[in-house]
Each structure stands twice: as structure tokens, then as C-alpha cells.
Length: 404
Image: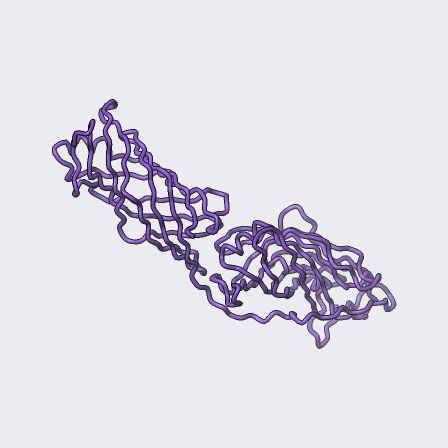
């Protein structure tokens, strides 16, 4: 393989790999751009990647790529600068995720890795590309176009050349409506090739005698992408909540209503917030048959903490569970302002596994199991009440609704 002052002539696939970068938003692909002339290698390639976004989780990239690499190149002949065009569609699930982090537009670049195999040379190549600032709709899919290029190449031996893509990493900047960076800042999106695919995007022959190269494409003004270094910020969400808690020991259910306000670190996904639950009442059973009405008060200790990662929220709230009153047919049995569990309960809650939790929509939020410690200061029958109230296996089942 020849070298010249433009750099190593490694990359018949440089152009194609560059194009793959467009997936930066997690997409489902559409038709590729047409070649400039008939001398280009006649293969438009469609490949699918799995890309890991911060906070919102994994999204697929399916993209069709077109290059101006000729189907044949003469020994010792150089191509024009290698160029690619691509067109992709951003899937509706990705749109939801981008809107949830405050996105109005997105812009960026990518670095793709490609393996070039040619006469007398097997090399790995890094390829860069860019896509222009593109509007994110309120919902549904949208298309994204992009462009990439690499230095001209040449080979000094006859033979066959192929180029295959492997991994890639996007650099993405999501902007708010006022053009300032959204809370994720300028972030990286690592992507791996989905299994079961032939990743060859260029296949060409090196032959004797110069070959026609075709006309170069016009370079767009957005290429190359210039990194901004924008830092992550904070996302703020507020939710009303409604549902119930099942108390296993006395076999009773109490309604739960309240709200939570959280701040999410755009760089780490760390959550901090304040959970507020209203005092509630429910029917319990003591000794298996006595219908007792209990008042339950959840008193938070410190902040609710957690994470927003892989499209799922998980939190831990530390709470004293207070029992101000127990009545049997309206007759007080115990309780009082100081009646509570001796130790606070750590209540771990989460949204549904494997389902993207969209903070703009809300959804289920559950504690599959929490414990209540022994009771204290609950009156003459404190011990009896404690036996029935203090157990693990309690659950909470809520729905979070975004505040207006």
C-alpha cells in the first residue's frame, strides 16, 4: 500500500465508516444517497448498531451508507478524497428520550473503526464524520442526513480490497430551544455492531491501468464537526404520586398520595430529591379477625437518592413509619404522636424493568419489598401491635404523574 503526504492510504473503508457516525442519535435507517457517477462500487450498505446513551439507555442505529469509492482502481493510482453520504431515521423511542432531557435539536460527529484488507496490507482505521444540527420533533421518527470523508488511497499491488466496520463512538450535543446545551452536555455514545451481520461496506479490485474515478461530491458546511466541550447540567422533574401500600403483617392496604421533586445530574444520572407523603388510613386485621383502622404517617429522613440509568429510575427513601392511632369499632387501642417504628425503613423503589421511564409522561413506580421495625411508644398494647405491624414483605405500588 502506498503512502503520501495526505497520510496512510489505508482506508477504502474510511469513507463508509465515516458515514456510520450519523447514528449518534439512535436510529432506524432509510435509503442511502445516490452515487455521483456509475463508476462507484455498486453496494449501498445497511448496518445495525446497538448504542448506549447516558440516562435513556440503549437504542439501535440502522443506517444506509453510500460512498464514492470506485469499483476498480489501478495499481499505483490514487482515488479522489474518499467521501460518504448517509441518511437515517431517528426512531420514535429515541425521540422520546431526547425530548425528556430537554432536547430541541442535535448535532455531532462520530469516530468509527474499520478493518481494511488489501494486497499486502491489513490495517485498522479510525474514521471521522459529522451531521448537521437537526430539529427533534415533539414525537415520532425523524430523518438525519450526514457526510464524511477520508484521504485518497492507493495500492501498489494488484488484488482485492475489502473494508468492514466494527465499533464506533459518537460525540453528540443536544441543544435546548434557546440553543444552549441540554443537561447532558456534549456526551459520548459507544456503539457495538449487532450480531449476525456482514459488516463489509467496500469491495473493490486493484487492477493494471488507471480507472475512471468519477466526480467528487460537494463538501457540506457542517463538516468537520467542531467539539464544544459543553459540560453536563441538572435536570429537574416534579411528580405527583398516587397508589397504595400493602402492610403484610396485619394484612391491610392503605392508600398513598403525595409528591416528589428530584434533581438529576446530567453527567452521572444521580438523583436527589424530597418525597412527601400524606397521612393515610386503612383497615388492618389483628389476631386474624379484629378489624382495626390504623392511621399511618410516613416521615422522611434526609433526601431521597437514586439513579436514572438505562432508561430506568431507582430510588431509596429513608422513612420513619408512624402510627398515630389504632381504633377498633371507633374505640382507641393505641397510637399517639410518638408511636412509630424504632428504626427508619429504607424503601427502595423503581420503575418497570426493561421499560423506558419517560419523565415527561410518568408511569409505574414500585417498592417490591420493604420492612417495618418493631414499634415503640404505642401505648399499653404496644407489644401486640408491634407483633403484627413489624415485618418485611410490605409493598408499595404507585403511579408517578408529571406536575404541570
